[in-house]
Structure formats: C-alpha cells, structure tokens
Image 1 (cartoon, helix red, strand yellow):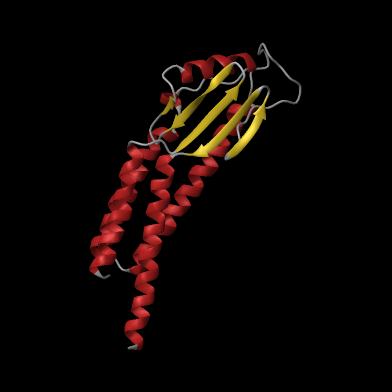
Image 2 (cartoon, rainbow, N blue to C red):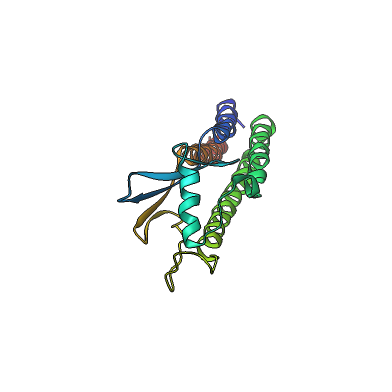
Length: 196
C-alpha cells in the first residue's frame, strides 16, 4: 500500500480509541413530569445516566411496570466490547503497517459484521427488557410492552422514548469510511498504474 494510504488506515484504526471515552448510543425519555428529560448514555463498557440520578430514576420508573433493573455490571456485552474494539485497533494498525488492499477489505468486513452483530444484540437486549416484565408489577396494561425503538422515537405510556446513535458511533462510522476509502483508492490507483 502507498504510504498515504497506510497513514489513513492507521488513522481509521486509531479513531476507535474514542469509543473508550464517548458514548456510542443514547436513549432519552421525555414526559410532562420530566420537562428536561431523563436518559441513558451507552458506552462500550458501561451504561450511565445522562444526569447523575437518571439511571436510578429510570430503574425506579421501570420497577412500577415490572421491568428488570438496569445494572451495567451484570451486562455481559459491556465486558466483551472493550477487548473487541482493542482487537480492531491492533489489527487495523497491523493492516496499516503490513497490509494490502485485500487485508483492508477483510478488516472492514470484519468490522461491519461486528457492528451488525452489536446492533442485533442491542435490539435483543431492548426486547428482553421491554417484554419480559414482572407479572406482579404495580402498573399492568394488557398487551403493552415497553421496548424502546432501536433507532427513532416511540410512545411508551406517557413517555416518548428516543433512541439515537451518539458521538462514539460516528467515530466508528468515520473509521469504516476511511478504511473503505483506502481500499477504493488502492484499487483505483493500482488500475491506473497497470494501464499507464
């Protein structure tokens, strides 16, 4: 690979360091009794309230509808994701140092597969929390489930739940785009050199 493409590929890998510091997803709840809204920021290693008391308040609200308590330490995915991201950073740097365009595409496909698996897992996590409710809950609405949307907004009783990617997600997306550009430029410039 050309030096400029190796540098770009290294930047693509290093962008993923941001995921250790920035949330990748956010869920906000808006309701008349919470005019400023409450919500959760989801990081690769933890889930925390947007404000210091938000996680505690959401767990309190969820108790009334029979939803399980959100306990970040008990969520296995939050333990798996940091080493998976570390693996992508290290292998991305290896590709930048020794790789060729086939290795770039292999890394990119692996990254995209892991991202899709993460989104599917997140949907299933939301489904479990929203559907598997305690039958002895104080508030029971026949036929009602409380799964937030994977992306977008949805009315849940008197709350409007909004689920959207956060800053870390866009760093990951930028990493994919840069790796894709490296592969494409290597391909185009390789053809140009053969034809000249």
